[in-house]
Length: 293
Image 1: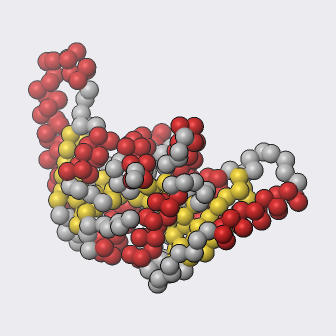
Image 2: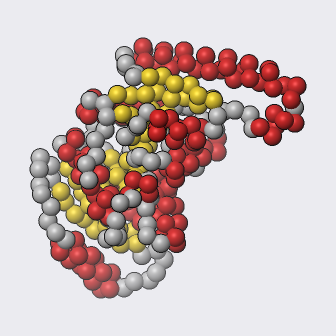
Image 3: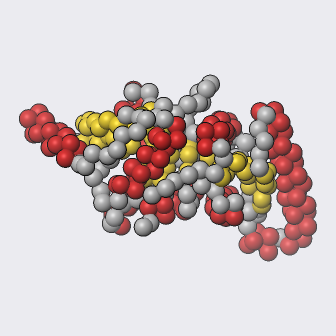
């Protein structure tokens, strides 16, 4: 698999996290010599409400158009202030999730960069509904910004591993990222014990078994970066991934939302969402559409 980043879509709702995400869009653009398209979506009132109040339609459309012009100036101002030359600045009206996916296709985006939480109180607690929707339907990887860093860099990448059949595709994306940034890779397997009471000897034996499986995997070509493999125990996979990434000061977590079975897809998807919600480390999320052969 060859993965290159030539076109980046930065989707913003002007929240603090979305503006932090812009720093990563710029980092990727400079590293990969890619262009950045800036997008803001002005939500439209649902057609059912408009039909119920047709007398307000003209006024509402006027407000939407006024909002689009205002936000277009705001996007241009961000570019000027931060000295970023956007390839395009787009303000669209409609469903944010649908528009982000639509524009990503139109602009042939290789990467979507955005904040993971919105501006509402609820979305500050959970993964934002827009981020969640994009995660589930995007045709390309999404980079969700983490806790703001003064100087974003990508030198250490963590890749959760579970020995699934499609794991190679996920690792190929991480391998491409490591090549782009000259970063080191760590493949992490979390031995999730949940609340099962596992004796110390049994747990140690399980760890050794996983370590042996890692060692038996075919060695891959080493280039200008280091690849290591680790196994840790934790209550569940999400907490293990997040705790390890933050304690070891990783710069990026590359994780997929794909699983083979419907049940596995449900659990893996929710697990990925928990990692995104909990992590201060930026997430490079690989949607299921990217893993199709």
